[in-house]
Length: 565
Image (cartoon, rainbow, N blue to C red; front, side, top):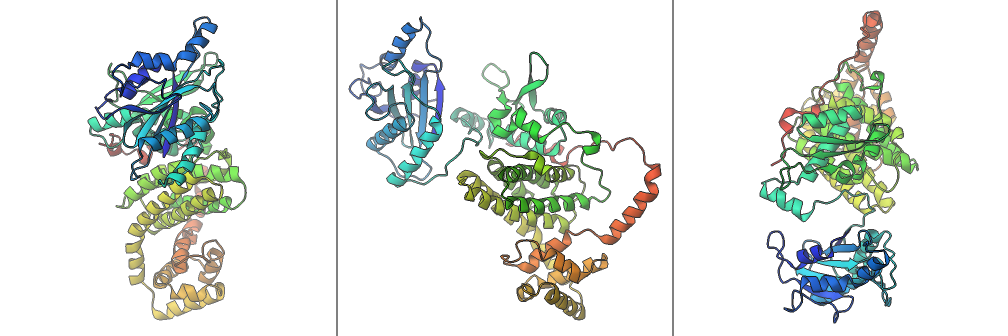
């Protein structure tokens, strides 16, 4: 059961909508199911003598009194509106049950506490099977305004109780950090235009993807405009600095042909200009994502940073953990944009799903997650997907998403936990698509039996407590190939196994050999490192002082710049 609270100042206008046919003739049998006084509330849906004006006058009775006291000026935003909708698949509720729901909501939100004879006047209108609209005028009989602080949260809490008592689907509680859901009008407009998402949703995803890839605030607006998105900034009157911004999707106009603007914070709380600046501080050239000689390094750096983020979630520093979850959300967008395989769709879905898990009421320490965010931005400028190393990164992201779900669950963040779990399922599916053929190829390329026996002895020496499970794992043969490659890259297999085996997840892993395989894959090639180090030292005196020019983020490929249809 989902409540949606809003306020306004047009009593009659809302009444006309509630009792009218709807924007698409979707309203059927509009009528009052509950009111402050059923005998005193004219019902235009059932009583031919009742009119919209008569009902508005009865509702506004105390507002009019208060208006005279204020010298003819109406109190601001004096119309309170709350729609309450059952979840898809819920049973049909009778008028009597909806009346009970309405009385509970107005009591819980402070509009009309039970037994309060001076409470606000209100009505509950039903014009569809699955929802009602509660409307109230927020001036009490004693002239005071009701105490409606945190009314949205109180309505939500009451709905959770009602779901349990009425046998309805139990939904997840929120914490006011969720983005605004599209309105019915926005959804209808998208349907008319043949689009699968509303303009608000499309803009939100574009804004997240761009913020994940760019280096600073200026680049953010520049790249958005390059996608055909209209950008309007709001400047401070004294300083001339940007204090807010709005976006409009290409071709999205109102009846007058003007762009439909959405403020950053109206797209999502962490897309406001202030929240963006916390994640996109102006950086010097030296702090930009570094030029990477080996494209594989971008994937390796991000994998290392994600492993570090997993440790932060267990550190007890909630602000730092929340900062890492925000950076992880950015990383998912860049990983998806840098991926070229058929599993890319799952990674894009994971990035979108994780958006709800990237923020909570806990204020994030974004500085704590600088390493992860910088490493992830390298992927936006990377060229090529380095096979097994990219899969090792997917493996790490799936584990971090599952850890994020548990972290949120432990703190009572129900919606965020569910979103992180959904992202995990997409990442797991993407990983399976990408990893299955690679593991099969590693198995086919297994070294000879004598080498495999030597690696078996290395496992028993380095990881005696896990050896039996590792050797019994179906992916053990694939691991022997990876160990052989690591040995060729100048790693000592036994020492390497001991090093990567001390990291988390091995105890609880269903396939410990698979875990070790991707951890070892993510290790740098020591021979390549040594050669690069010698080259860097010998070439230092010949380096140009001109910084490497920024590349177009991979996330912003031209073929992805049109709206989803």
